Structure formats: C-alpha cells, structure tokens
Length: 230
Image 1 (cartoon, rainbow, N blue to C red):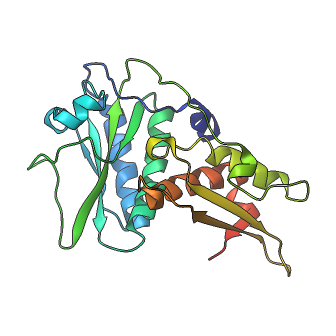
Image 2 (tube, one colour):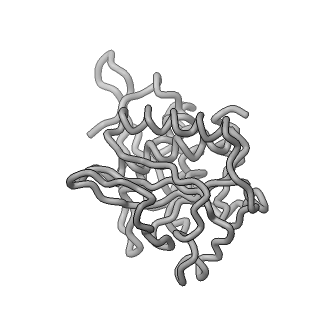
C-alpha cells in the first residue's frame, strides 16, 4: 500500500481485536516515532498491552473497545505544539495503515495512566492515538466540497486540487473540517505558495486538525510543487 492509498483507505476505528501488536511492526513504529520526535521536537510514546487508558466513562461513551495499544501525543508547551502533533502524528497514522493496522485520534476519551508515559519539564499530553487490529476497517463520513475549504477554480493548478482533495480525507475532531487552503499566485520565479488556516469552531482542536490536514495536503499536492505561506 502506498501512502496515497493509505489516505483513501484510512478510517477511524474504535473497536479492536484482542491481539498484541506484531513485534516487527512494534520495532518499525518505535523507530519511526523516534525519527518523528526528532523532526517535530515532540515526545510521542507507544504504549503496548495496557487496557486501563480506555476503560473510563468517556471511552465507553465514545464506543471504544479492546484498546490496549496507543500512542501518547506529547511535547513541550508551545503555541504551535498542537499543529506539530497533528502533522507528525498523522504521518504515524498513515504509516500504521500501511502496516495493516487501524487507528483513531482521541482528544478527550482517554484516561492518563501513571507509569505508562514519561513527561519531561514543561511537557504536556495533548491527545492519544489508539492503534491495533480493528474489528472492522471503519467507515467513511460525509465530507465538504472542495470549494468550501479552498479557493480552487479553473486557474489553480491540478496539484493544488489534488492536495485539497487529500486534505478533505484527513481526520478532524467530530468531522468538523474547519480548515481552508488558499492558492497564492507566484510573483517571481520561486515556487507557488499555499496558505493554510483554521476557521472558527466551538469544538476546538482546530490547530491539531490543521496540522493533520496540512500533512495530507502535502502528500496529495507533492511537496516539490509549493511552499507554505505565513
């Protein structure tokens, strides 16, 4: 499976088979976590065979079942922490999909179990990602139209449209899709620019959602076709 195929095949899964993760997959995930932590200045941590984090009332209300493996999404406090967690965490989600696993971003329905993670000075946990062998592959949800989340028109390049379409397949809190991608015409010989921004939400999590959507956009559009605008 390619990462482009993983974007299309990935759906949120909350119920898992009672199985431990394959050792080779664990080794691969831990190596990638180490690399992404370094790239994103994060402290993501894989927790294996630990059931307590998803046995609380909120987890049951959220219909989580048999969650025994998860990734703790943590990092040092910063204005851009949530966006970095979304961006690099989604890379892990897509890698897991390519390895035959299923996942779900979790913002509230988990419990912090002492002894299962380590936090350094000024570090905080912002989310969990459940991971394992799903009872199902999940289902797709209704998504917005491409012109609702971007300024795409007949003059924008095809790669931009491809990027927005990939972003529309990104997971967001309660499927809110509160992001917008703006194509900026270049005025010199440099690469085209794209501005990504959040839109208003009562739910929150828009910074993390934007990071997730930006990673999808890059994959769909091709990172060599543009640079991000401030």
